[in-house]
Image (tube, rainbow, N blue to C red; front, side):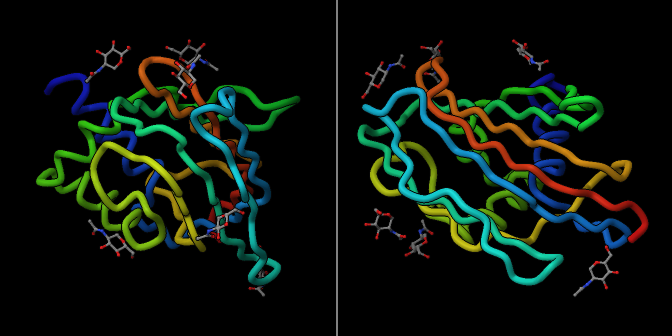
Length: 174
Ligand SMILES: *[C@@H]1O[C@H](CO)[C@@H](O)[C@H](O)[C@H]1NC(C)=O
Ligand SMILES: *[C@@H]1O[C@H](CO)[C@@H](O)[C@H](O)[C@H]1NC(C)=O
Ligand SMILES: *[C@@H]1O[C@H](CO)[C@@H](O)[C@H](O)[C@H]1NC(C)=O
Ligand SMILES: *[C@@H]1O[C@H](CO)[C@@H](O)[C@H](O)[C@H]1NC(C)=O
Ligand SMILES: *[C@@H]1O[C@H](CO)[C@@H](O)[C@H](O)[C@H]1NC(C)=O
Ligand SMILES: *[C@@H]1O[C@H](CO)[C@@H](O)[C@H](O)[C@H]1NC(C)=O
């Protein structure tokens, strides 16, 4: 298999949710920030609480110029005397990824994203970008109980433009 295919195969399930009933996952905080205000600005980046156990992710941002060349860096960290790298640190070509919807794994990713965001198309992206009420968080691989941090770095034209960091609490064998 091509290395990129393998990476995608890993990335997609981890980031976007094959269902695992035996785990309890709650997003506990989200931080978004931009490195380049002339390309991407955030208006809103917050979790909404549904109940003690459930939150949803809501993001509203604007891309001031069309983004045609987008890579996505994905890192998982686990808390243990500060957050330490854990299991994944990969970067994918997001535009290529979105174009290849015939791949069942990518189709799954797309199906999740399209229902909760304006990211329901292929590149380029420009203008208002919204993720609303994203809450179908679950795990593809068993993770030990603990506090995790998912770092998403959005790289346009080879340079990181902004990041979205999602803090989560996982309870095994819920
Ligand atoms: C910042 O964004 C502008 C587009 O508004 C782009 O031309 C420039 O290359 C970006 N700077 C960096 C360091 O990525
Ligand atoms: C996104 O935020 C902007 C600026 O606060 C606001 O004007 C716009 O209505 C928001 N859009 C959505 C869909 O939330
Ligand atoms: C929340 O999760 C805990 C386990 O973490 C469970 O005992 C409790 O019943 C849940 N509460 C609600 C309102 O779902
Ligand atoms: C993740 O990988 C990138 C590129 O391979 C590397 O530059 C970076 O230092 C790594 N980050 C961590 C936290 O391991
Ligand atoms: C994306 O979603 C919006 C709002 O749900 C919808 O109007 C639009 O047609 C969708 N675009 C595609 C390409 O599916
Ligand atoms: C995206 O931009 C990077 C950095 O400028 C470049 O190396 C890469 O070839 C570009 N990818 C595409 C598909 O144009």
